[in-house]
Image 1 (cartoon, rainbow, N blue to C red):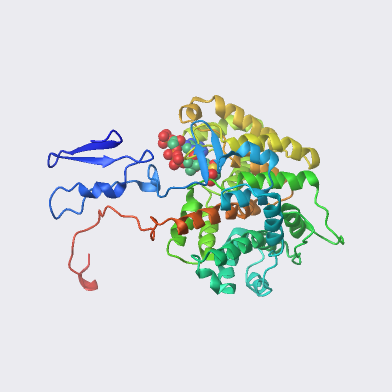
Image 2: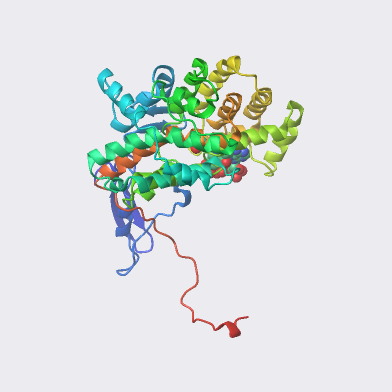
Length: 429
Ligand code: CMC
């Protein structure tokens, strides 16, 4: 018996099994050896919502939820937020190392020169109602990209893959800006190759009649930091969707479209929109105690609080909270900020939240910043999807290269009826 193993006794049979432990886990398939009888399928583990199941080995993002640590490829998120750019961070996530100066220049050049999209995509846009949710449009547009690049399905080929990754990272801001301008009925603005990734995005969103759009440097940098903070977060719901859909070997446009769809949900990328709506509904500080009471009675949820992994202050929330002040210096102050600060203060002292280890997450303050920058709430999850595309693609690529991965296919515990005879409609009760 090795020390790094688990000894299990099956009380149904009295048999003893030794299961190897590797990286702090046993292999779920090793449980299959544990059988009650010769024709038994073997033991399974039951884990709805993947509460304790590692579905992959990954070298991309490290999170220690208890200590509030987040690192990309070993680099603390705080250092990247302070010193890196979004495109450098995206390169790091995708290729494992910070780029040399020459590599970075090439990478930025490549991404900058793939920002244009096929004009036919505008016809897809024309099919949407004026009030279509930008995330609904984005899901469709990213999926539609698949039809323009049929070679993309060959994800195993490294060169093909490299090109699709550049295209997706480059075109996401363009598509995102299209959805925004469509909602406003504004003519679409084309990319400006002389601007940074975030500067160009602001250009495509907000350019009006000026000959050249000049992004405000504070807002450009704030968006850059927000993009770095959102670039990856290991095996969350949307990343799992990208890996799972991508495991069928569909092209990365379809896999990323699945990620965008997952991100649309209010418990994931839609949370900062939900935070703002919550703050708007609370309205003033004096109504906070009543709202907290509703949360404790299970009649409301404190959006922007709690996390499946962080049982401590989300390190991204700390950075965002600091950045909020800088941003509000150049925008109009957000009247909801005092409500948010007071809500956080009260919740952090309240036994209900303390005992459940519910702390502010990345979404608690990001919505306030986005709103102050001029984004409507519907755009918030879109702003999440742009940088997360880098993480999704890094994870997708890692999955493709992992010889242990196959098409994702969970098991179930069947609890339905046994075999029954079909009943003709006239005889049904
Ligand atoms: N407000 C009030 N109670 C909460 C909250 C909250 N935001 N979050 C969790 N709880 C309670 C929950 O009711 C449960 O209580 P009890 O033990 O009495 O039943 C306990 O805390 C454990 O919660 P859970 O639902 O089992 O936790 P989970 O890991 O399944 O959920 C979560 C994680 C993020 C979905 C949840 O905390 C939540 O809904 N938060 C609000 C939505 C939100 O801010 N989402 C953004 C997540 S961060 C962005 C990202 O990384 O994607």
